[in-house]
Length: 542
Image (cartoon, rainbow, N blue to C red):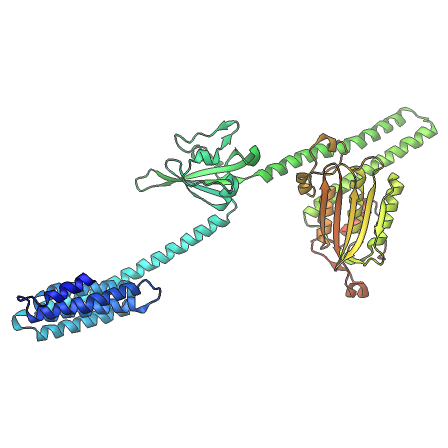
């Protein structure tokens, strides 16, 4: 700026520079250049109107000065007007461009009127210039409008695409033609590991996919695209990779090519779905079928054996007959309990069980079921119930089922004669029931999954206790249906504590005694019906 001003000031005093040219140098050097710099700095501030209006207006006035003081350069000035108008239309909009176009036409007419006769612009030049200004405004306005619409649409689609990629549950990995990772959505990061920097790395290094025991080779193209050409392409190819801890991570994967302008593969989009939970559920169901078959086979074998013996001996000993019939009855009851438990589990999962809430005495249920436990198994449990324990808003039959399952679980997994502790106390707005045993306990992973349907501990030491793996699932479902919560505290080798928390009955509940239906779909009496089927006697509300 200092050099420009110095050149303009010095040039205006040179002997061969005429008065008009000297004035033009002074105007451009001392006014237009500083003003342009001010506008340039103002453009750095967002929303500053000086950058939008001051710059084009200053340029038009500078061109008018050149047009008036140096008429010989008028044709070049007209081209400058068009450039300024086009720039103003792009940055400031149609109104500013129309204003500057009108100003340019007016200033051109003024400069031409005061110019010497031989330097005036002819009408043959002014008419095309006017038409060019009008055409430029309309054409550029249309072009800019279409461009902005296309930009807005592109930004909207880009935002939509980013939102989909960020929220979609499947992992998406985009690679270039040489199998280098270009893009990876959050779901894919969860699959390959959040801490890994995958962009720019080879697809083989990031994913490391296997089919069977064979690692996929991407050196000669994506093998998933070849596999995806079959009739089941939409379902994906069953593959696996080594996940955290070296475990196999099963995936459903497919890939599709994005062609470039020349028809070659520019990018490859990989879709990855983690099916670990589906595989675990499938394995759990398979294990459940084997377990249930074993659980059913044992009582059936006993029943069949005694029945065969009785049929083969037309006059059995009276004592043997009583023992045989007792064993058959006990095993039949065991079969009935297993089948009814399976039925209740299936109806819970289908949403066809509805729990009817009413004020229920926890103390009465705990003492009754502990007495039944002692009668049936001979196990005595310590019971500590807080005095004046408030009633809870629950279903009496559902609470009975929950308590029976927890007691049965404590007896099953405790050493012979191991102590079972039952406590109940009031919390703020809640009543807490704790059932603790001193049995084999569970590790953290087992405790995490103990409420899952069909879940079974895997070690052989725990499988010797039997069970179908749905008891705790029933407990969790019924407690949740009553608006409560159930938690587990366990240490391997030190025992397990199940904590059930139910909401206290309100004063309105206790005064009215009107039952309230909890969330669920189905017959209101279904829980009571199932409780009757598994041998829980009918009782009126305390």
